[in-house]
Image 1 (cartoon, one colour):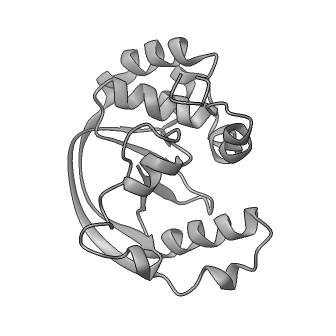
Image 2 (cartoon, helix red, strand yellow):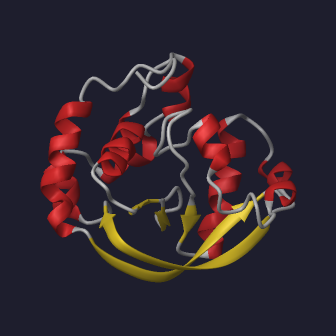
Length: 173
């Protein structure tokens, strides 16, 4: 159990599947975009992953490990912020203002979950990853499917995951 969140029932199986597919992990060099509320767009906060470690996110359970969420396009980074507001029934315009920064990323071991062969090995579709209601699972004190995948990737020593975004773009976690 990660503090008061119960682990996903399929975690052990997902861990084995992630470990088996890590042979497909590759180095990644890219520019990605991070969207943040201006309050947190500081040198100390922007890349710390502290907010997601404390509160959780789609790919990491609350009170687990620091995770930085970024997108491969600035448009997708902003779309993700607006999608979060829509989820809570808020006006997407209230997601503004945002600070969007570009980050030069160099990873040694990243796994691309947007590749069909990787998803097939995990037995999880892109739609299922994109629509996994991790917030509702966490309210019920449960780890969501995507959080279990992220935790398995973290436990397997992967540095990053390329994942589907809300607008059919790609994110880097």
